[in-house]
Length: 330
Length: 143
Image (cartoon, rainbow over all chains, first blue to last red):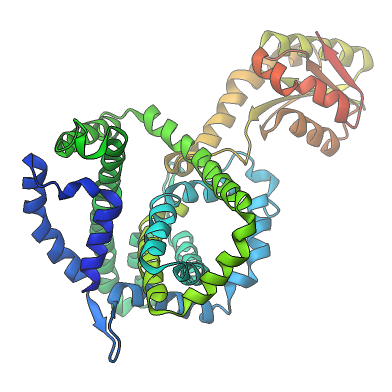
C-alpha cells in the first residue's frame, strides 16, 4: 500500500466517514475530483523508496526533517539554548518603554499561535496516533523540538527582509525574504529567488484551499452529519449544499468586507487555545494513574515500524501547517 | 518648584479634576503636567491585520489625543497664567500615571473619581482607587 493511499484513506476516515455513500450530487463530485486529488497527492507525496524496508519516505517529510536537523546543528541547538530568552521576550523584559502602543512580543506570538493551533495540533496528532500507535507521539515531540529551529530561521529572515511602507504598515514573509534576501546575499541567484518567491505565493493559495478551506469544511460537515444522525441524517448527500453555504458565508466576510465577523472569530481563537490546553490537562489529570503506562507505551512504540510511520504522518501535517502559517508570525 | 500631575480622560469628570488641579496649582504656584493615557495593554490579542497597521494606528492615536484632548485644555490653562505641559501616553491608566510621577518628580497626582466607563470601573476598580493605594505621592481625587 502506498503512502498517499493511506494518507487519503486516513483523511477520509477522519474527515468524512459518510462519503462512502456514493449517492446523489455528493457522489458525482467525489468521483470527478478523486482522480485529480490522487494525481496531485502522488506528486506532492512522492515516495523515496528505502531498500529492505516495506515503506518509503515521502520526499516532503524528508525535506522537513533534514531542514530541521540542519538548522538545529547550524545554530548550535538554538531551540534549547534560547528557551529562557524566549520566555523573557514574551514577558516584555526587552520591550523599550517608548514602544508602548506598538505590537508587543506577546501579541505577535498570540497572533501567530492563533493561526497554528487547530488542524495541525488536533487533527494531526489524532491521525498520527491512530495510524502509528502511541509511539508516534515520541517522533512528533522530537519533530516539534527540531522544527523550532526551522521556525527560528524562518522568522528571523522574515523580520530581516520585511517591507516597511511609508504609511507605517509592515509586511513580511517567505515571498519577501526569498526575493530580497537571496538577491542581496547571492546576487547571481536573484532570479532564482524571485522564482521561488512566486512559487511560494502560488503554493500558499493551494495550501489555503486544500488544508484550509476543503479539509475544514469537510470536517465541519461530517461533524454536522454525525450530530444529526449519521447515515440516516436528512442532511446525508447534501455535502455540496453545505459547502456552498460555507462558501457564501466566507465570501461575505472576505469580499463583503464584514471585518467585524473576522475580528470576532479571531478573538475567539485564543479562548479556544486556552480551552484546548486546559481540556488536555484535565484529561491527563483525570487519568493520572495511567500516566506511567502511557509513557512506557510511547517509548516502547517509538521504535516499532508503525510508530515511526505514524510519526511521519503527524510530522507531515504539523509541518505543513507550520509552513503555511509561518508568515503570520511577524 | 512643585509639579502636579493631572490625569484626564476626555470626560466631564476628568475636566473637573483638571479644574481642581489648576486651582491648587495657582494656589501653590506649582507647575501642571496634563496627561491623557490611551488604554493599551501588551497582553491583548490582535489580528494579523491589526498587527500590520499597529504602528500607524499608534501615531494616529497619539496625534488625536494631542490635538483633540490635550492641546485645547493646555492652551486654555496657559491663558490663565499657569505653567502647563501636556503629554499623551499608551498603557494602563494608573500604572502609567505612577511611572510618570516617578520620572518627573511629581508632588501630587490629581484625578477624577469616575471615568466615562462606569461599568468597567465598577468591575475592575477605578484608576483613582488604584492610585490611592499605590501612588508614590499624595493623590487628590476630585468627585
